[in-house]
Image (cartoon, rainbow, N blue to C red; front, side, top):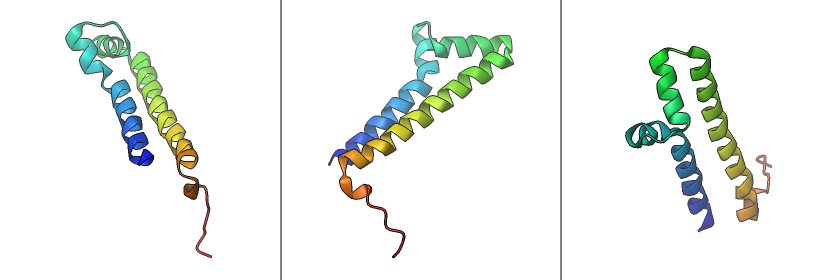
Length: 84
């Protein structure tokens, strides 16, 4: 029961990070989304690359943490069976 909930939480957290551009632009909140929007408008490529890299690393970190958490939530996942 916990694994699907953990998966959903991880996906929601990742979408909150990557969906910041839309929310911050609509509601005029300062943040990475607004910074990215302004960087695109000004064609500031190093800043765009930095924000995209940060977002990608954040999503990868969330997925890694979630995969490591799976072993704690369900001990059967820790068992390694290489087809023997």
